[in-house]
Image (cartoon, rainbow, N blue to C red; front, side, top):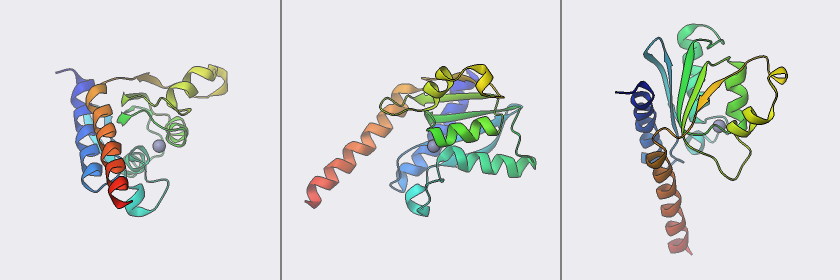
Length: 156
Ligand SMILES: [Zn+2]
């Protein structure tokens, strides 16, 4: 099986954990030398912390695991294109590759940041691929928001 698909499936499983506790379903894993070294899923509501995005949770775990803030040889798989907060952390961590599922359409996010900044503006370049398991990842998010809207209507 294609490695990107294999690890995205694991990120997807993490997103399902977020969904199970009524969080926006986003999951992430960090891979180094063919091993998953960290996993994370969105826990913003549960922790009431804006920084508890799947990517940042995974980054913190990976840094602890490696005893270093540098994630040079690591790749991050995430079900949704990273927001600008997480993109900043990924650049700072010198992550090697970012592989994401669903794209962010309405906000300025990872891809736009990568495309608009010239290489001289960042001291690190991240390789990236979007759209891996795009349908599944997008559908999980749409499903979550559809259900939220339904609940909101019933409560009115
Ligand atoms: Zn984020």
